[in-house]
Image (cartoon, rainbow, N blue to C red; front, side, top):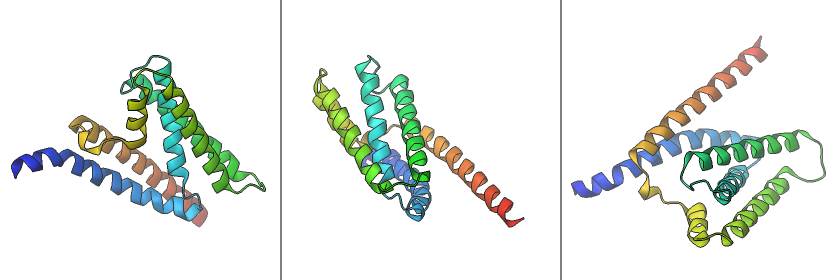
Length: 163
C-alpha cells in the first residue's frame, strides 16, 4: 500500500494545485464567454514548444519552456485585442481558428522531425503520472504568484470603482 502512495503522492498534489487555480480562473473564463480559450492557448504553447524543438532546443528544456511561454503570451494578447474590437466574427470562432491552426502547424512540423510522432503524442497527451516533485513545487509557486497577482488586481479595480 505504501508503494502506491509513494507513486501517486506527487501526481495527486499536482492535481490539487491545478484544480485550485484552474477552478478559480475557470469562473472568470465562463463569465467572459470565452469558453475554449484555454484549449486554444494550450495549442499555441505546444506550437511554441514545437518551433523551439525545430530550432534545436531540448523538448523538455528551459529554452522550449520560455519559447512556449512567449507564444502563449502573444496568443493571449491576440485574443485580448480581438475581443475588444467590434467584429462580425464571434470571439469563439477566432479562438477555434487559432486552435485548429496551431494544432495543425505543430503536427506538420513534428511530422518532419526525427522521433516526431513520439513528441506529437507527448504534446497532445502529456503524462501526469510522470510529474516530479520539482515540477509540482515549481507549479505551486508559479500558480500562487499568478493567483496573488490576479487577486490583487481584481480587488484593486473593484476598490477604484467603488470610490
